[in-house]
Image (cartoon, rainbow, N blue to C red; front, side, top):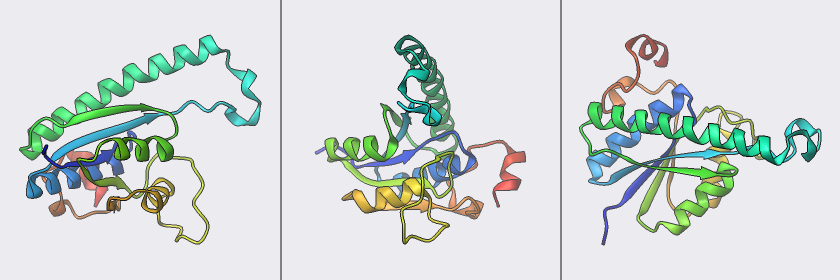
Length: 177
């Protein structure tokens, strides 16, 4: 049996870095491997103008550029977490599609995933499911309703002593409290 995996979503937000540091701490405490995930999603009907706004060639180029940038960002976050948190280099997953659809597929296809950790606030623009408190992030709410593993939402004001070690610049850390 392979090691359990704690998966954390990285969307480029400061809260995602805080969540990744919390996930790294859990992975170290539980002897699990850390996995980082990013989903690239280019809307098929951007801004409601219809699918003809972007040609398939332009959409392909945008996706290729986004993939290169996302891979570079994931690699940098993985290296920082490994260095600052004292864990082995996290693996990362780059998905294409809506995160609320692709992350559950990833979890379902990887039975070693034992938990998903994400920031309560991210760059996501999806609407909040009805009936859930406003402070619950939209992606977090959707994943907590669909996944069969625990989902941990990390608020942006998490105390720094809950992290393995800072994984961002000291100036940014002051604003994270």
